[in-house]
Length: 469
Image (cartoon, rainbow, N blue to C red; front, top):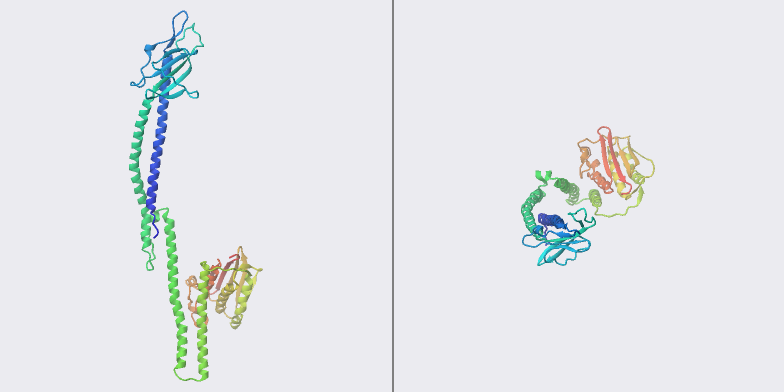
């Protein structure tokens, strides 16, 4: 048994994963940028402390002034529990001021900032070079400058970042607790129209072809095309099922009559002894009935094969033929019937029309259409057959001057076993399969057959056959 997959479950997992990734991204970005801001603020504080150390350097009042440092004015450390470190040297490298325990720090050559560990604490140091002496007398040299190094524990930044991580993590967790259930609720509510549509589709059967989608399914933008497609498909299936059921009923009815006649003929021959002439006449009548039954079965088989080919169940290799030659063959076949009824068949074309088709298929189509035209055309009139090209199609128009087809009857003329009232007689009407077979064959080639009729004027059948079917 194949394992089932749940769309709702997959969507919920995708939403939860995306929410977790989003929360993790927010957490990382927020911590990163806040850490950078805190470090920048700490760097500014270091620079201010270093400048305050430089401000405490001044010239002595001796005859030959020298640089001195006011130790008692050093500002308190940034972190009360830990010592700040500083060092000031002049341009010759002479140490002017230095805090107790100043470590040997190798400052980075590429950056004014250096991180190091001292007495178990992480420190950050800043070096300022070419700092001018702020307390300058007129007699002091203007070229004197200082190099100031200042270091302080980076513990405040570390504590602030730790608190920040807790706050951001708590905020992200709170948002997840709110957004994930809300997203799951929204997904389930969004999938409810699909569940309703599936429930309605499960109620469809051979006795119930109505989909009856809910208003939510019809108003949902993504489900509206699916709902319409399913409704159209069900309408087609219902028509096909109804046609198939009617076809079986009509076929049984049509087969019943010749079989009953054949049975009656044979029974009458067996009721009493008869002469050889009577037996011969009875057998000839039975053969006629058998031929009629065979014709009906052949028509039904031809219709089934045409529909299988149209559905793609059969594959055929088709050669290129001239459309005019198939029409001429059908006209020659029906010439005796046309002469008998005093009807003249006129064929006109504007040149050869090559198509890929089986000539027997097209001859059958023209024969069925011409036979109807000849039978319903008044005596001493003409049936017109006109062939011409229309783009990628070869077009055959067959027009008669008969009584025409009523407008309410026109949509049904291609139904199986359908015969209009004027053609239901056995001597003229056949079985009502000719037009159905013609339509199935034409559509199997990807073409179309269009009837146009005007009562009292005549009927015109327009057949379009693609040149490359």
